[in-house]
Amino acid sequence: MTVLVLVAAVLALLLGGAGAASAHAGLSGSDPADGSVLKTEPQHVTLTFTESVSFSDDSLRVLSPANERVNPRPAQHADGKENTARVELSGKLPQGTYTVAWRVVSADGHPISGAFVFSIGRPSETAAVVATDSPDDTAVGRLYGVLRHVAYSGLALLVGAATFVLVCWPTAGATRPVRRLLTIGWVALTASTVALLLLRGPYETAGSVTSAFDLGQLGRAVTTRSGGALMARLVLLAVIAVLLRRWVRRFDGADDGARPPEPGSRDRQVGALLAVALAVTWAFAEHAAAGIQVVLAMPVAVLHLLAMGVWLGGLITLLFLLRRRGPADQGVPASAIARFSRMAFRAVAVLVGTGVYQSWRQVGSWEALSSTSYGRTLVVKVAVVVLVLWVASYSRRWTARLVHEASPAKAVRVRAAERARVAQTVGAPPAPAREDHDTAPDAPAGDGPDEKTAPPASDPDADTYRRGLRRMVTVEAVLGVVVLVITTVLTGTQPSRAAGEKAAAASVADSGVKVLTVPFDMGTANHQGTVQITLSPGRVGENTVEAVVFTADGGLASVPELRVTLTQEELGIGPLDAKLKNQKGYWAAYDLRLPMPGEWTVNVTIRTTDIDQVTVRETVRITPVPR
Image (tube, rainbow, N blue to C red; front, side):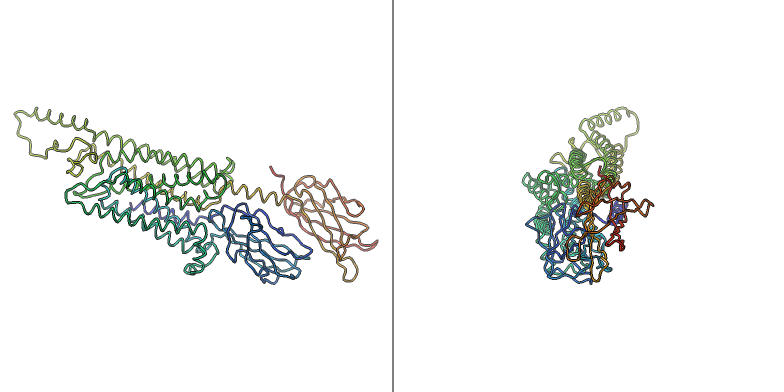
């Protein structure tokens, strides 16, 4: 048990802080676009995400070049669309570069954040600076991740120990190890749920740990999807505490020497209902609640959680019972071990089946298994699960031998052999007195009304089988804890399918037409013109270049010559001349070929008169051809 606890603690700390967890949603676009230069100030800023999001009063901030906030009111959904966030801007805005800092909460409960810039008139030399750290790379984020590990562990202990008693060995509820596990599971789950609820507000808004006791923030957190799920979980845990207390009183109220009361079908139904309800509080606020096929994903996630609890929590319960010491302790009946073996096999089958569906839903492609964090973590989990199944096969072998050793037919053969040996000792000194093994019941312990009778003398073969089973169960439980930790990490990692959707949205936004608006001096006092260059499609290969020159008042300007060249300075490519031709009002070229993606420098030479010219420059990102 010391090794088990140490492995669980170390893995929880290492994997819990191994990296910032990515959320499900992603920013797919914005208006104004990132890096755009506008002629006039916009009335509002709109962000569009890949899925529905929620936000607080301070989720979106638009900062002026002087680092002053210019959105006086909080964000709202644009046109009632849940995947958007919009803020209105104040009246007259000065020219320069504006910074938009945002932090929202995706549908699966994880916060995401980012920032981008746009300019009015012309870019300014200074811009507001905002933090770009991961939403989980904070003290609250790291603590929140550890508490999620504790909550999953508490659920596994509570569900597994209760199921072992209700299904495998009813009278185990009177033993101290099982009561301790039930208590530890309930306390761990309740304490972590309370802490998660208090930290929910600071977790969403990047607040400090001390702000967890802000009643206003707590009230707002309760109204969110994740906060509501945590509140429902606390109500269910209060009901479970009352039922567990009544159950303990029933066992303690039994007369000395009498058989403890067994749970009936109604107890099993109530227990199953409460376990399902607890699992729903996770599915309602995790990855199953977002993405594709939500109607099917929710019950699958519930089954996956319950199977995990039955298998892992039951393993730990069996391990505690097998490791009991003392002459007064009653060994675990072989029939109870056999029942758990069958139940664990079904639970693992459900885990594999639901896990395959969840993997397909969250990963989306074979390539994503190696190209995304979620896919690589999932590969590790699958490898550990395969190792668990291999170890479990040995556990089933030891269980089969133990059940065979305790079978009635085996007992009859043993008694017959003992009588035969006694008959052959004629003329020899009388054998020393010993305990009569024939007084033991023929049925396996735990199957009949004589379950409370004293166990028979130790059988060397049975002891060997129990020791082997105990070793295999210990290894299986340790690996189960590893699977639980990896599962917790997966629930906080951006699914591969969502990452692909986010990348596709970003690719669409980035591979579209590139529009550059570059100001230049027209050569006369206080006359500032602009040249607008359109590059389509803005990626590797053949591109169309169009250029229009505007006067200071926004009218079209006619210039004698306009030249555009592009240079990839890092790779030493260029300058490549676009060879623009005058199209009577604008300049254009339709066959500019760009060989490499990356940042290109655009040099624009405008001849304003026969003898005057000016050269300005701007950068543009050329994207690769989408596959």
